[in-house]
Image (cartoon, rainbow, N blue to C red; front, top):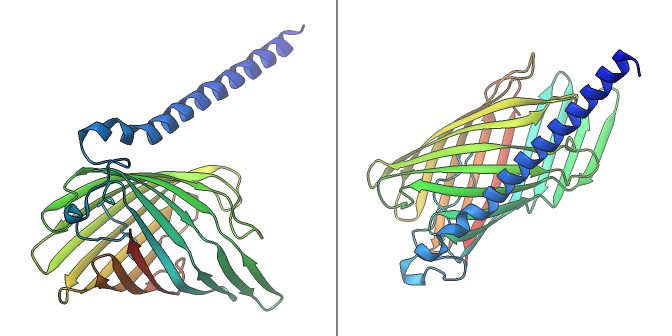
Length: 297
């Protein structure tokens, strides 16, 4: 065997071993991801020992703001947060895009007093793309998100401050090529603070690994959002939000938004919401309207 062939063989063996080591690390992270919450089952309420109704926290939702939430669902309970209708419009360099979404839903399940598992599915999307040369109409379903939420302190929406971390992975379940058909994921950190009986602030910072626009390789991306909220009365909550998303891909531009939302508490376990998001940078979608609701079991 020539020296060059031997060197190539060693290099190939090294790459295979490196891939195996990376796979082991991913598996270990995955095991930790799913088993960490179960270690605290004996310490209090859990999936198999649900929080009694009289001890439930005040209901909070992750929707419709971009800042998510630091508060977990009470152990042994489920919350369904669904988009009734969403409309997104954008006009970029003569290409007009309109997307309507129905029934995008997040299923949140309380595992322990400080952790939850959630799944997000987008079953029905209508997308229309129009330019001077062509027009494309697509009816499809979207990707699936799998998340864990770990509250590190606080977790009481009625007082003080709260902080949580949210690791997640995107599973490419879309069809009709409305997604990039790649696994992506990241880590969110979220802070909430109740300033007094009327005002709140929330902050989100997220680091993720996404595919380049040509789907050739992964690059880091950064997302941040800040919102300021006010309780108009015991049932209505209004917020204003500033959000920004930026990929590390070369020549990419930040997507900046200014958002306004209203959440109405119909009952102790049921809310309705509406939000309008406005793009304030060229890369962002021009307009987004969403309305939906949430129900806790």
